[in-house]
Length: 248
Image (tube, rainbow, N blue to C red; front, side, top):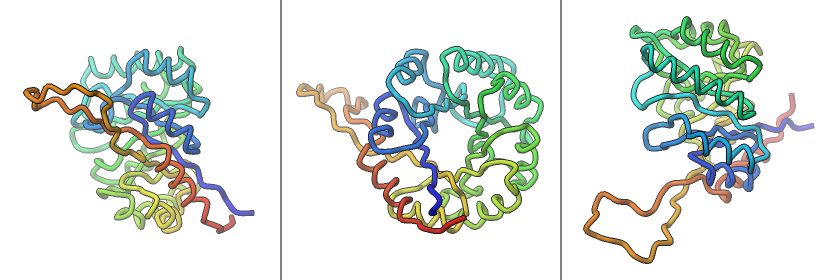
């Protein structure tokens, strides 16, 4: 029997989450502000997604754009956001923090993981910004995270597939390795095979055209169109993964 890979779709808001569901995704990573790399979504976004999406929903816990070095107030925001996710019945959280030296901030992350309680935790791509990926992997395993999302420290999972394969081998089943960054229907199956990752992460985004008939062209900084996950692209990713027939 062939092994089915899990497809997680990175969703910037409710519309993307609904598209992920319609296209056949297995799990949603929910966030706001795709342009900044993702931030924690609003209360209403969480609540409406929880009401309308049947898939498991993991929520990004990230208080601001930029680096992953956080101070006291940022830590407090993340802790409260995690509590909020638990109260709303979300299925998991996605988090990460580094020290100024580029190591996993084990002290802060331990607090965040503890706040998550029985919710599974994914360590996000702060991992790829760490100075020593093998050491970072051991630190994340030690935190008790269920998964780590990574491109193998490269700009895309395509370029980092060999590193990801080493991470899968090193993890030895102690933690799940999710391959993510730069994945499309044209390359996702190849990355899955080369890396050995059984979970893949993609945004499947497309341009959603505005339905506005009026446009004040003097407002040159106002873009009416926006990026959103597209159900057709999600379905293409799912179909590409389903072509794989290797067994384990």
